[in-house]
Length: 189
Image (spheres, rainbow, N blue to C red):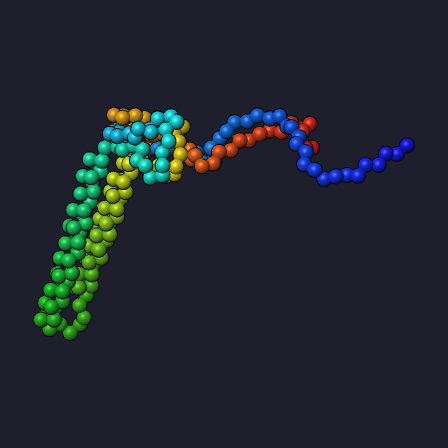
């Protein structure tokens, strides 16, 4: 005997038993980029705390970095003055050269070209120092890079943190992943 059945397309639910761990797709370990005493922590700065992108999570004492920035600004002002003085000396030296009635052209030293190059380089270095001081001052604040939650903290209010010290581990709350292993017997499903 032969039995004939017409195949019908239909959805079938198959059960596959598995278990896994939820993990964040984005996990960040924040470390101190400057040294100093922690003078402020946000209320959410604890395991499980929620934060929004841009929130200030932690502040390190900025006093030394504000002073360094002020010194860097003064160094830029001094370097700008030195460059202006060299430019004025160069112009005066050329006027004096012409008054002497020399027939040959003035040398680089008469035009004060090496001194101008040196003063310009010192100004560039002073400006770079000012930019670094400003970056260091900005690094005294730990801001949240995205919306998320704190996994664990490694410091607290009043702690001294050297550069490179871990501050906290946090993760983005927008996407979590679960990796589920599938048994070989269920793999055909």
